[in-house]
Length: 118
Image (cartoon, rainbow, N blue to C red; front, side):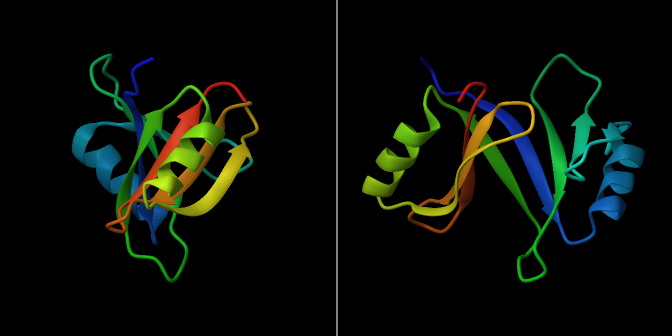
């Protein structure tokens, strides 16, 4: 299995303002109708990847995070840790059944591994 970048996420300390900015600038539609408050972005194009906006914790800066699709989130987390990554959010099953984990690579860049199945 290849491991494509399948989604992006913008973490923002002002997620509503960020959603308005990108929506107005690029014509993206933003849907926040979900119990987690996630703002799902539809770019309106079949090219590229889709994404979303998530509220950044107060102590965190604004940043963009890539989601990489993997076969098994747990296996990928173990391998990443062996290579020097630090686990930030352990493997978590989301309401729609997807599984994700968030890590820092050895240089401190945040990224997520993602699977559509548990």
